[in-house]
Image (tube, rainbow, N blue to C red; front, side, top):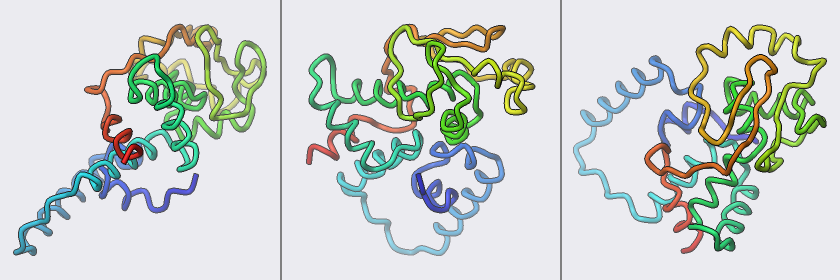
Length: 208
């Protein structure tokens, strides 16, 4: 998915959108830019409209997961149609259940973009079968692992050492470090306070 200059997007949407922007260097640059704008501007900033706020939340979510406009719109449509829970909860489940995201959550890749490449290049198996579709919807009980002949590949040769510094794996995924295998043991648990964007605003954007 082509997104354009990442720093420019991060300045507009926030540093959490891309891993590239989650650095001290970017934070310092952003701070200097903000101070310069405040000192040079004499006009009161215009209040953001509800539409503008919803649009920003949509873009935050879409860029965070690296999903195209069409794919994201389809996820929202399906989420609204489902009646099992709220649309925002369903949208979260769709996004978190993507194979590239699960590969990222397991720590097989440092970024979601890298996870998409790893999946596309055939390094990952689902229940023992190679799958190269990043958008594949992982189901409860599915086993996700690195393909046997790729476990000693340069991409994963230092995986066990790097796994010590891995962020916490979500509660809905279990992980076996020795076998380099994860199990999608339950549906993702939606907790708005854990997110850097507001999925309810995203739903409202599409329901205008």
